[in-house]
Image (cartoon, rainbow over the protein chains, first blue to last red):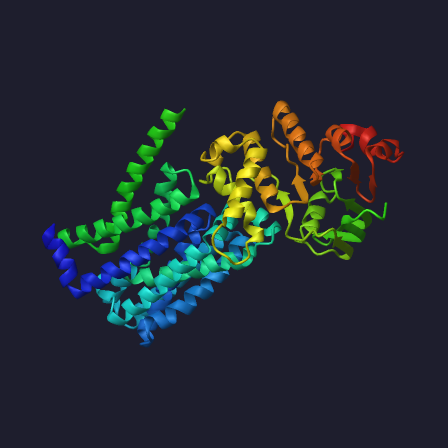
Length: 274
Length: 239
């Protein structure tokens, strides 16, 4: 175990991945509680596919990846939010349309440019994808997300629990929904390169669902999600280092195990209460 | 009557829902301490009127004026049960204190004053012992008490209740009505949308009855005497 710890601190690539990963996991878990409860988890999934398309095109055109992906994903977030809050269009199918569309465009771009070897790392992530420059941007964005989340925590609770009451008592629900979409978009762009666009939305969904099995207050669920997210991230990284498995997939597998444990604990608690 | 200060004054109000006029040229006035019941068939415009009172819907014509120091975001609103919150992890305390948000502005955390107000309103509705319980584990009646406490945190003057007893069993319904009447007696004005005409007749100081093309506003006595009051005579078959 000591070897692993010293490896993480002495290898710059691993250390960078650790820093960015912990921050992204925290952001994803905090936002995840609200997204899952608002039935918006599909938006996270849709955004990661759009992010893949943006990254692929940026790579082919030789543009800076973050500079392209951040605005594109933010724009997509607002669009998806609009679609899901409008009852006239079927939200889930519209999201599927956009996400598979973006995925296809990305794959076409990559294969036409003959960079098929990169496809795998875009789809399933790679800790080697994180450059020094990325670390600075990622840390700044992640801190921004965390600060905004804490600052608006009470409002986020109110609009997540009961939009109509919040609206009636003068909370600008639309603005805060956009804030949540914006923060989600940022989190996904930062986390996508390491986790892969296929797997990043698991960081949003798993911790929230796990904590909701056991905890009963919004605050406890939020804190527990943050803890689960960081712990599963670090465990996943250790597994990935030890067994040479891909980082993103290892983290998701740890999350599956945690979900099973929390479901069992939740079931036992409910039975004892009844 | 005009001497008494009004809380809400409605003049020539016309409202439409999806391009259909549901309320036309309506006038009425709510004064401090009133208990107004809004009754009417489905589709008669009750929900649209509620939205307009909450300033969530712009009138097509006419005006809604708030008086007596009532601000637009100071209406204690109890929404219809949506079912969306049924599986939500939130403690009773978290739900009640979220009613204080409208007076907070941009400041991020709750102050001692708001914590105190939350505690008082929980005590008033007899839910202090449920403080740490999860909202989703409560019975329907307990949930409504929690939402009522939250509404009281949002207002000192006016409660707007949208079918507060739907889905509750008769005993809990009676308790709920007594609770609302108590709050009204303590000086809080109540506007309640309901399907329950007998409760409206028993508790309300005024009744607003919405019908397809017309409306009635008056005291329960006047409502009973109103010859066009088909709603009362026709009963169930009319709907």
